[in-house]
Length: 390
Image (tube, rainbow, N blue to C red; front, side, top):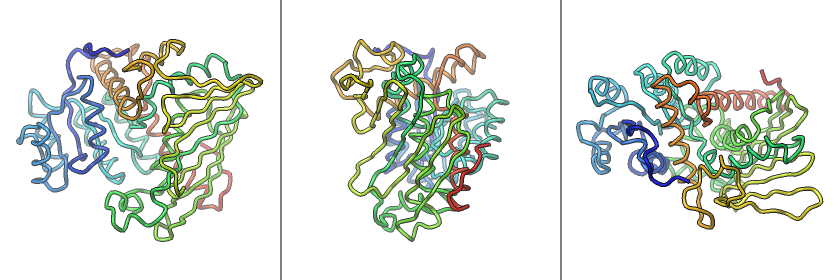
């Protein structure tokens, strides 16, 4: 259980691109990164409007001279300082991620980037090669992957408690965009603009979240081929989809499906994952994150509670306040930022064994998310046909 002891030798000097005033995701990044003392916020290019960004930055404690007009100026100036940046988080619209991430890596910085990492697999592979050449860590914020019950599911599946894995059912299907809310909401407007959002809306914006949870729980499963159908129920969003169904076949013979949706009217969040094996099934829902259902054929339903001593030690290592109290998004994100920090420290000292022992949504997860969206779009645009996952 985390108890406030130092988790890294010294806090990592950290900055942000984007995430300024009014940015919900920016606040989540800062809350997670600063919670355990593993990062300290020293600089930022928080806003396209330099004055507004400076006012915001100084308001959260960043020195005025380290609140920059843009990321290029920040990376150049910080490189000249003996106490300059070591890492940066990118909390900007999708269309900017590739350029900022590439510039950060070229400046020798570790990176935590919002997903999608970029728009094409070719771009993602370029970033992976650059990260490997620079020996820099790239984290991708699939936030709920840091919840301890995801770790518990991973351990139970690896131990064979579910038997042979047959079906993986995933969804992220909320209802908040069941109408053209983007007309009055700038934070939504860019998400349905192909120039800023890329080749998809809900596939890349939310569908990759449960997909990554499945990769954490089931690292041995590899997609063989997939088929995707996507729709724009709010017609003004075309060619981008606000609903999509993706079917997948895995090399092992298992099958999976992902429902990605922003028009599931009445649904609050709707991110769920159910893994079905030959002996038992488990299910986790992010609106009720402190419980996971475990259903053994022929036995009564079990509900596993976070923070309890019967969980796997790796799951309990992520526990923060003991059983009974609710934990959720902020705790999961904080766990990820701790893992990012440990990976960055290990990378800086060349400790490959420590790096190999850590698992977190990194550059490979970013590449895979982009590759999955690219294949889904290709399938859907060809008339919902099966495409090989190569």
